[in-house]
Image (cartoon, rainbow, N blue to C red; front, side, top):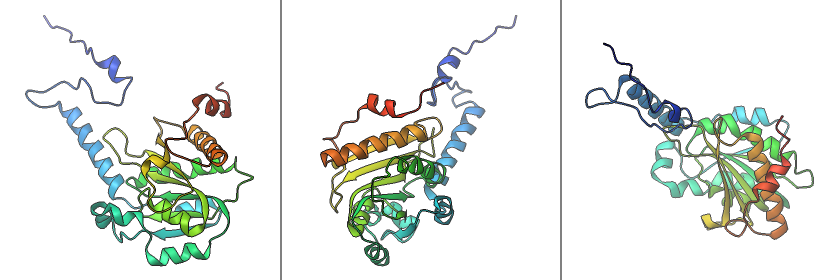
Length: 250
């Protein structure tokens, strides 16, 4: 008599991207689970080592003016080994930004970070949705930054003379999501700012935070940062206020 084996984990797997209840084949994973794991690992590696197409991003952002810059990490291998070099601009990029300095309220930076896939998929729609609510802000040319860490935004904003900086950057990929975008806001940025002096919006991807919600969150944080003249742990997010900025769900 054949017994029917019921998969007791099926209902839980349907609610999470975590790998749970995968089963086994002898003393190893079933072939399907192993192949899925290897594919996810490959996507994560590709996201880290792939290059963002800044020419394509600049085309998507037209007619907004864009400036392309580079950190002191001159290639991907150096970037991964030397995080410190990804936090400072190379000399030519510094000169480019100083020539564009002005009395800017906000500088937006699109940075490749650790996932080029995230930047290509999510940065432009989030940025455009946010900028639509900043009609009274003086916005610097959009900066496209290669081999960049979050803190490169402090160097960029200092050169541009911007009161605030928002860095849209590819987050470290995992085995469930390889294209997650993060946004880091710093009020009065300067070289040496601590991470506690920034506000972070994370997990922007198809199965996480939507572009619209991320943009509304960033817009609320920007307005509050300008009102209170601070960012980081002193600026607490108000989810209800952000939700009120979003269109009703129909």
